[in-house]
Amino acid sequence: MSEIKKAWYKEMSVYQIWTRSFCDGNGDGIGDLKGVLSKLDYIKSLGVDAIWFSPIYASPQKDYGYDISDYRDIAPEYGTLEDFKAVLDGAHERGLKVIMDLVVNHTSDQHKWFKESLKGADNPYHDYYIWRKGKGKNPPNNWKSTFPGPAWEYNEELDEYYLHLFAVEQPDLNMDNPAVRNEVKDIMRFWLDMGVDGFREDVITYISKREGLPNGFPLPVACGMEHFTCGPHLHEYLSEFNDEVLSQYDCMTVGEAPMMTPDTALKFIDESEGKKPVLNMMFNFQHMEADCMITNFIVTKFNLKKLKKVMTTWQTKLYGKGWNALYLENHDQPRIISRFGSEKFRVESGKMLATMYICQSGTPFIYQGQEIGMTSIRLPNLSMYKDVATHNTYDIFKKFGFPHENIMKRAMYASRDNGRTPVQWSDKKNAGFTTADEPWFYINPNYTEVNVEQAENDPNSILNYYRKLLKFRKENEIVIYGDFKEHFHDSDKLYVYERNYEGKRMLVVCSFSDTIERFTAPKGFDLAKGKVVLGNYDELNSGFDSFNLRPYETKVFLFD
Image (cartoon, rainbow, N blue to C red; front, side, top):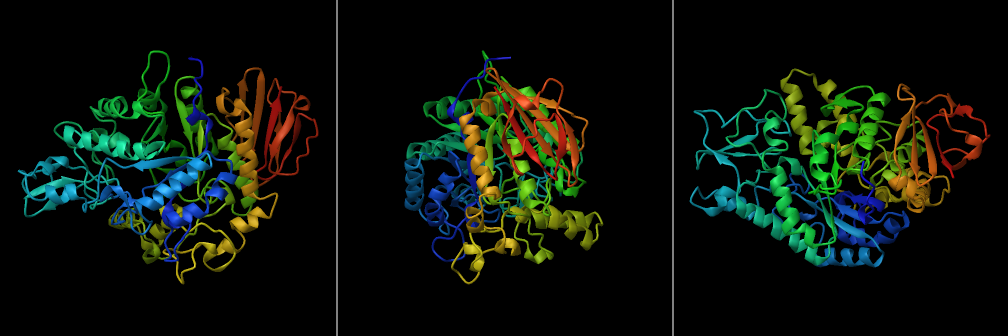
């Protein structure tokens, strides 16, 4: 095991902004950069160190910004480049770094490159994308999109198909073309030269496809993934981006990678002696499958043992080698209290979940609204959903014979739209999100009780707990750089682990039960010698090594 290398990106915590639903600054019902600018002091007050923007580039918004039509401009509904520069300067003035989303597996079909590619094989932009002739009347291979449906779209004029691993409006770029890689490097330089501090790299492990594009193992969704996940030239291309651009700047990168495991992640983020990482961190999805299989729509009962196994494995396998990216919510996930916690015990479980992941080793990411305990909205009618993946998943489940009521039950639990409702700023009209008559999307009816204004005025709110928790992390290196050891791994109610660093010891106790659970300290711990530094109930430490944990209770003990 290598000695832990210190770095600024390891010590920071990140606040993710999905701009469309964050705050409307011009009264048109859509969140925008002026709205973000107005809330920079609030973001700073949380104790975070950086903002990560989900895509705010020019886009037809078929997949809400992940279909980019111009990498060097801002979507008009969000503002202008000048608005972005004002936010960037305002963030930097407050000591906040700014991370952009880099989406280079695919573009929008409205991007000028793709429009040029439609002019035929003689056009140099044709080879910017993956165009192929069909096999008779069939597509080039049997690959399926990760947004359920075929991965190939036929163009009658060209008599060719183009590959799209996501929505039909998101054609995949041909990263094997050196001209495309040069475009990516130029895009990186454009934003880094402006002052941006790094990138979250969207589905970055899909950018290299296997030569010949062979048929994949027949699956109803993402068929062919063995040929486009961590493809043959992925490390080579990431090294190229790193060597020629990223290494020239003081910036950070975090990859997003479906089907990622710790062993695979280390191929890209291992910073051990003699290793050369091509990314700083890697997001994974494994722990988000504690209540589902493969996709959120294949819902299972929440399984704490499953969650613990994944999180503990990432903690132990990466420690001293690579760095973890910690999250429980983002724009692709329903609200975590509604999944792994309890809406009945919203405040208690919200604080416990925050403690559980932020006290682990890694850089924590907090998604807008998570810090006040927002919950899933559970829209009852398909027509109410705007997310393209929800509609595509509905269609595929329908084809497999699932009744409408069953699919809608799944959508109400699993749709990404659950995490995309406007941030609830107050109990006023439209939750204080917009002064328009109608916001762009539905607001959760519980905004009258769950909102920032209410939370600011309640010293025991989830919001103020996040502030306390992030302050504790910043002031105690054990939380950032300590090792990790799990206790009671067979428990299906408790997640208990310890951290150790430079003679200090920390014990984190988290109950995932809605009833009282008996807790006895692990062997080797004398709780009377420890100090309770965090907890979501009244801070009463009896000094005993065995006591009752109340529903969703968490306690953090620190030992000198």
